[in-house]
Image (cartoon, helix red, strand yellow):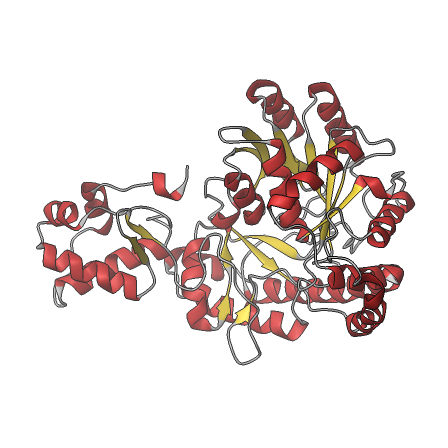
Length: 474
């Protein structure tokens, strides 16, 4: 269900808000009641509210009062109105699917963005790339499939992981998001089904929907994707595409075990269904050996891998890639001319330089993230009653709040100095109100400050939060 499909009728909203309190202007009492309903999760974010006329009739109030209450909710950031589409509930500052820019030391702590800062080595890599640029400016600057040297570097990295790969099996894209969008546009169309994890990365869902396709959710449990249900979905719903995150799944942090990977490969082969594995976080294994490659030693033509420089190196380096059968690479290269004509040449040269020293750079990044992960988990366990599993890799923890207050917490958190994204942002159809993704990409001191602010915000959420907080050992 999309947010535009969710609607609450006037009588239902009247029952939810109850009797409008006296002693204050009626419009203010009504807006306060609706605010409480949104922030405690009783009125889900993305719900279309009744028209002023309908709610006035249900509550026995004037349309002027309803209009003033709705305006108050808009000013609070809890209601968004679009001409011809009505008004829907939303959240101030951070809502489902919101993209938040990193904040500075003086502003709210950003616990919404899973993007670490660039390594110091990036500056030197950029200078060396500039030195090489004169050798690449003789033509028009369009590299439809990517610079040959970058494709060769990426192919060598796959081969080193045990996946024999040549440069003609690599397409360089404008980030992993660009890769996913290109694949979705090429492999599915309006009305087609795409099997996806639930919860899932919000931008992946956006790319699938932008292609006109319909995400079909398959649950992710503590051990990873439910392969039984995935195979049943492929067999019965006949999706045109399957999209999964095999390593350090965003947001749950789970990884598929070797048996699950082999079964996934068999599903792709047996049903001749393309399976895209997003390996954006595959370089960020923090504990134990890295998971075995999703593609296997002899990749089937229906298996496609997507990679990215954004999490391994820097989000400002907007480069991703696709590793697939050469026939699909050529098809995608022809299709992408209608989208972006190719990735920036200078960025590609910078990535070539970084990949030349990738092992050392990634070792430093993993050590840094390991320290930050531990600082975040320790701060949560010390200040809050939530359950948090320590992930073996990736960039975030998926906490269990113990109560359906994720949207409520996201709504009040900015007032306490921290920004978070509610768990519902990661649901195919919402949900996950008891969950919240908290990245550990920021420095440890920022993470601790953010958790302290979250504890302050949590304490304002009423009896359900208070009951939990009382259980924290002193």
